[in-house]
Length: 104
Image (cartoon, rainbow, N blue to C red; front, top):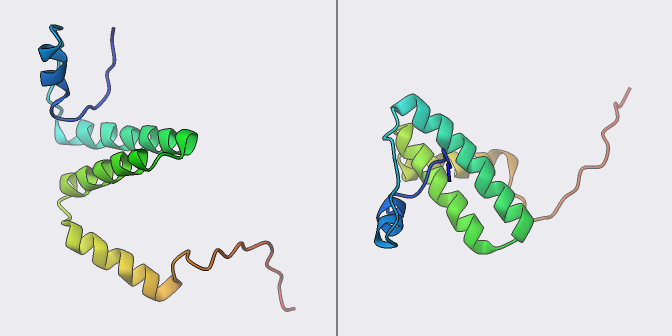
């Protein structure tokens, strides 16, 4: 069966310990980011379908991999997030914007 998808580092070992063979490729940086972006969509879709918190953990793992690939440490990422919270707020108040009209 062909997959052509990014998998976690230990997946080939797990497959081989099951007595199966697999063919893998180590991606270059540009292709790695492309496959990470595809993985973000995949993991988000899985979470939206199941609502399972474990899928959010998978999504976070992919986000951390993207940050590493872009050479952004998690502390810097958290500062960016907190800056946005300070300037624009978070989502804790559950506000649904329904309409905006001009004051003219």
